[in-house]
Length: 161
Length: 286
Image 1 (tube, rainbow over the protein chains, first blue to last red):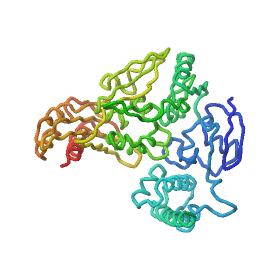
Image 2 (image 1 turned 135 degrees about the vertical axis):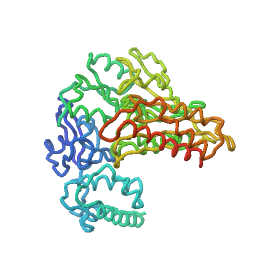
Image 3 (image 1 turned 180 degrees about the horizontal axis):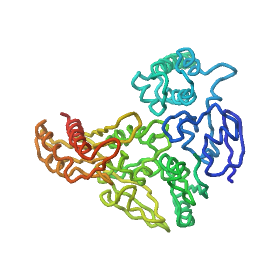
Image 4 (image 1 turned 180 degrees about the vertical axis):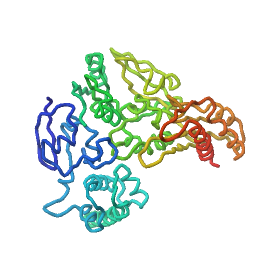
């Protein structure tokens, strides 16, 4: 066992983990953060996407020990004071989901995309979420949701500046 | 799926890493970004006794210039590469290929050196390194360093010139500046899939003549390959659709690609010719 200290969604944790424990299993089984799901278990689908020190990663392809000393943000940590994150709200309003299984990862990947490119074109959105598979929607409403969130988040950022 | 148990070492310097590799016994695996290794460990296709994780070896991360060369640290991530100003200026072929590697989340973790040391013939960076005549700087037990040219580095399927106890430290590639045009042409079925075939081309023009041509082939054999016959046909040729098309027709010469669910060998050879034509036309500005 190896001891790790990690901040997840703003709270600090110190835990013993086996080196082979995947980050997604640590989040779900030791911390109860079941909002992050295991989809394909082969690094393809992106359902388990979280942010590790501010960058999107597939948490099935990172060891929990590698998060030692780091900051992890999951889908459970992006709403503030009971208010949905603009990206969550946009997925809701634009109906960017059907079964919802890909949604946590899709939202985390989309937030990461806007961090690097606040006003992406439709093609850039599709490329930005290429690591996240949705088998229901055909992506059309997902792209609309990201567009809505981009518009909202950049105008909010402008107002704050 | 969960990997089999292993002992874990997390060095913070090259010296510590070499010690950890030496101490790790016979069955040690070096983990760079882990984006290929963790999946195969999850599937239990690999079950090393010891994993030496390089993610905290910061001295291996970054790009610098040294005269006419770019020196790329083995632990430089694909995302680092895509943000790096020196790569943007002198390493456009590397950037074009890196953009096609997997997806953004994988590119945040996956590394330049890891992708090369993994030496998957369907990986995108080995053919680029070969086309650029990259030099691989390798540290051995005790810290002594040696340099291996790309032509000798890729030995076989998933096999490189790296010996037991050795560590890939950095990769030197020539700067391709003014006069060079580049293109990475990748053919795959869906987003984030491996290359069925891909072609890395760099062409230097002098006026209306091709002065130099470097062409690497992805997934056309058990290692990356150079399209030597095409390169030779291009050098000294006029920049025209006819000469490029004729040269590209030789791109599959000497290749023995595999057949699999995605493509038969003869179809791969067809793709190599077509993609070489496209890549060279784009690189030559046609």
